Image (spheres, chains in turn red, orange, yellow, cyan):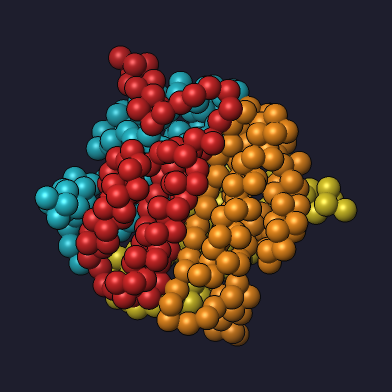
Amino acid sequence: MHVIADLTVVPLGVGLSLSPYVVEVERILDAAGLAHQLHPNGTSVEGDWDAVLAAVKRCHEVLHGQGVPRVHTELRLGTRTDKDQRMADKTASVQAKLG
Amino acid sequence: MHVIADLTVVPLGVGLSLSPYVVEVERILDAAGLAHQLHPNGTSVEGDWDAVLAAVKRCHEVLHGQGVPRVHTELRLGTRTDKDQRMADKTASVQAKLG
Amino acid sequence: MHVIADLTVVPLGVGLSLSPYVVEVERILDAAGLAHQLHPNGTSVEGDWDAVLAAVKRCHEVLHGQGVPRVHTELRLGTRTDKDQRMADKTASVQAKLG
Amino acid sequence: MHVIADLTVVPLGVGLSLSPYVVEVERILDAAGLAHQLHPNGTSVEGDWDAVLAAVKRCHEVLHGQGVPRVHTELRLGTRTDKDQRMADKTASVQAKLG
C-alpha cells in the first residue's frame, strides 16, 4: 500500500530553535531511502506504508535518544485504490490547471 | 513506547455520510484492544506505538476493502520520556485547574 | 456560516507542562460563549465562523501576552451546506450505529 | 500578528478529483495578495493573521458557492514573538544545516 504523507515533528522541552531536529528528521527519511520534500511547515514523504511509518517511529526514537523529553507529531496519510499517484503528480496536476 | 494519538479518518468518494466509516474505525480499535474515546472530530486512542499504528493501517485496508477509493487520515502522535502519562491524565489535569 | 472545529494549541519555549495553557484556552472559549468540549488531544468547539476564529486569534494573543514566545496551533474546520449539524449530532450518529 | 500557516482544504461529496478545488484555493490566495507555496499535501501561506484567516474563510465560501456540500480544512498556524521569521527562513535554516 503506497502512502503519500505529510509529516510535522514538534519537539517540546528543548527551546525555540527546532531546525536541528528537522534536520534529524530529513536524515532519517534519507537513510530510509524514502522520497521526501521539505516545505515551510513540514515534510512531504511517500513510499510503502510500512517503510514510511517505520521512519516516523524512528524520528520519535532518535529525538528521545537525543534528550528531547516530549515529541508531538502531526501526520497526514493519503492512500487510494482508484489510481497510482505520486507526490509529484499532485502538484503537477494543480500547476497545469493554473496555467 | 507508549503513544497518545488522535485519529481522524476521512473517506473520499463515498458521499457525505461518513459515520458508517467512523463506526468501522471504532470497531477496529475495539478489536485491537486499544483504549479509545470518540469525540466530535475524531477519536483519541492510546497504547503501544506498534499496536496503535497497526490499527491505523488496518483502518485504511478495511475501508479500501469496503470500496472506499481514497482515504485521508490525520494523525497526531504524542510520546514523552519525562513521565508516564495516560489520556485520562491529560483531561484530568486541565479539569482540576479549571476547578 | 456555522463551523465545527477542533483546536489544539501547542505553546513552545515554556517547558513540558502545557495544561496551564490549555486551561487558558478553555477560559477564552468560555468567555466567547462558544460551545466546546475538551478531549485528550485538543478541544472541539463550534459556532459562527467569525466567533470561533476570533477566539483562536485571542488564544495566540493571550498566550504571547503571558510570555509564550512561540505558539503552534492545529485547527480542523468543518462546514456543510447540505444539513444543519451540531457537534453532538456527530458523536450521537456514530454511537447509535455502534448500538 | 504575522502567521505562517499550512492549509489543506478537502472538499467532500464531489468525487475523487480534488485538484480543481486546490486550483481555486491558489487563486483565492493570489487574489488576497498573500505569499504562498504549493506542496503535495497542501499550501504554505503567510501574512497578517486577519488577511490569512479571511482567505481561509473565503475558500469555504467559494467552494460552497460552487456546489461543494461539505468542506473539511486542516490548518496549522504558527506565530512567534521572539523573532521575525518568514516561510523561506524556515526551509533555508534546515537546508543550511543539511549542508
